[in-house]
Length: 429
Image (cartoon, rainbow, N blue to C red):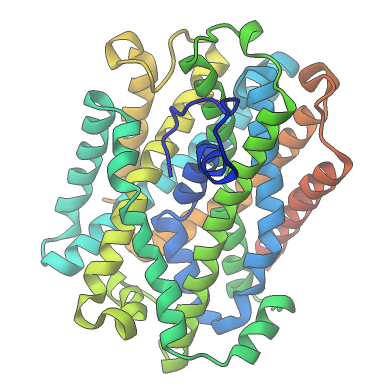
């Protein structure tokens, strides 16, 4: 994994393996951030509640999420602007600010849920109330973003996300019925009930999240800025090699994300659901899925994974809010590569987003339910933004000759249609 401030995709390295690892940048970080505390909780709820029935969503959502993220990456690389900046130049303020509004609502709720999940996990292993831990994590994230950099945070916390591979190991230790697992993976199972639809919308929402669209495009722009391309004119356009490297980065990141998703659902189905635990209310219940591997250390393992992903995801959530508002309002020097004193408004948005998210934790909501419902909120709010992504990346005035291929466009419209249908079904039910 690497940070948002990477060497550009265009540099060449001797040999295929060094070149492959060099190409991994914003896409892989996006994939890691996608498995945030909200995602871990949602996948755990899916596995515990419906067993193996949700496994097909990992296979089904992979090409959809990869297509949307690739569109966003190509948008940033070819246009030289972030998603909000492109929407501002192509559409009226009546489109721009509602799109930013959808993003901000989803992100702030997601920030609050992630902070609450981190605090709840720490309460489980320390006995100290989560009300103490949530402001500690919020303060730590703001402090590190203000006085170090997101690059430094990635360098430290990316290793904690490797804990999520414990779900992969555990899945093999518990010896599930692999025939049943295979059938559930390749044959979609849908139940027309409110509980199933909320889980389906939650899975789609935490996998294909609005904040990742804005973040991906913004980070491609950041890479160019780091290499001296300060103006939009300098950043416009990308070579075939650069776009191919970005595609490798995106697909690898999304594959990592969905692999973890798949095995969290599988492991919780084979441990919690199989033993009658179908309603997860606490972090302790969710952590018990790792007991076959870690025994009494399962709670610590779960907590480390949750904190690692949270420390990566919350800055991405707050940062995507800041990028969207900055691009919409045409603020100068709005970048995580800048120091706070030279980008005061940008960093103020980050701080306010985290603080408002933190405040939600004192509304008396159950942490696990808040994590789950933040994913559902993302799932309901994402479709209009997916449509905008497809439209701007299919626009020759934005992309020139680099508009979406027919396959990419078809996947984008499929994603928007499926997410819209699931959201409508949930609202109807």
